[in-house]
Length: 248
Image (cartoon, rainbow, N blue to C red; front, side, top):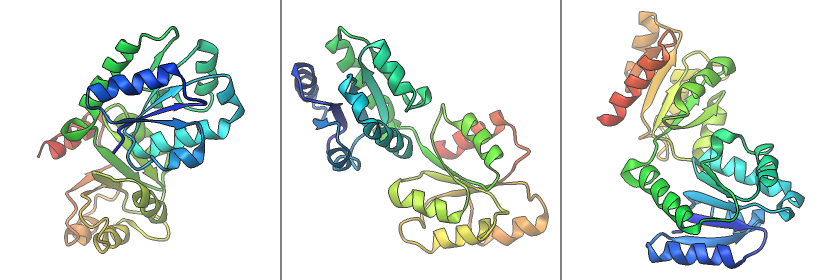
C-alpha cells in the first residue's frame, strides 16, 4: 500500500531520487503522472501527496482540482515542490489550509525526506488525526465548528443525511457531530439509519444541537449516542469534550 504518491507532469531525476530515498526508509512511495485516471488508482491508499509543480501543470487545472478534492475528503497531506509563481497558481485552486508544506527549488531532498517521514509519524497509525463529520443544515454554524476543529482534526461537512451517507461511502469517520432538527430526515432518523447499516453502524455519534428540552433528549437515548451537546457550547469546551472522548 503506497503511503506517499509523488506526482509530477513527467518523471524526472528528482522524483526517482525521492522514491529511492523513501524506499530505503521503508516508506512505500510510487510515482504518478499528473493524470486523473492514474491518480484514482491510488486514492484509496495515499496518505501524503508530494506534488512537483511546473508550468506544464497549469495546462491541466482539472488535475489540481481533483487533488484538492481528494486531500480534503480523505484528510491527506500535501507537500509542494516548486517556484513561487507556481505556488501562487496552486493556491488559487487549493486553499493554504490544505497545504502541509512548500519546498522551493533548488530542492534539499534530504530535508524533504525528513519532513515526509515526520509527517507520516505524526499523522498515520495511532498518531493520525481523527476524522470528524459534521452533519448540520445550518451552514453558517457548521462552518464555524469547522474552523474550531480544523487544526486538530480532519473535518468533513454534510448539510443533510443524504450528503452524510455519500461522504461516508468514500471516507472513514471516527466521530459524527449530528444536528437534531434537519429537513427530509431529522437527526434521530439519520442516526437510526446509520445504526442499521453495517458500514456505518459502529461510528460513534454525538448530537450537537439547539434542542435542549427533555423530550428531545429522551427521544434519542435508545439510539445510544455517545453524548448530547448543545450549540451554546463554546470552542474550548467542545474541543475538550472531543479530546476526552478520543482519549477513552
